[in-house]
Length: 116
Image (cartoon, rainbow, N blue to C red; front, side, top):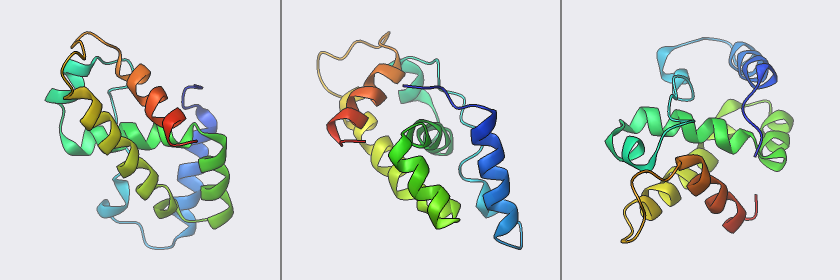
């Protein structure tokens, strides 16, 4: 899975600025800091942090990125981020999942399962 890049930041900036009025509510996709974290980190993190990190990972999918780009609306990304967050949450609370497991591995498995 590719890491979010400068392209991601530029895409998000252009989408947000193109929607007109900029408000704090439009920042749900910013501030994710769990990219290199473990399942234990994920389970302790706030919902906004998990959602923003999930948005980064979802946008790393070429299919999701294309849908967001074609729509011209960053809100197109949110259902994908929420679906990925839910999958990671379910797996991270499954018996046998080790707290030291890198969350990116769980996210990758979820994305593969969902066909992204």
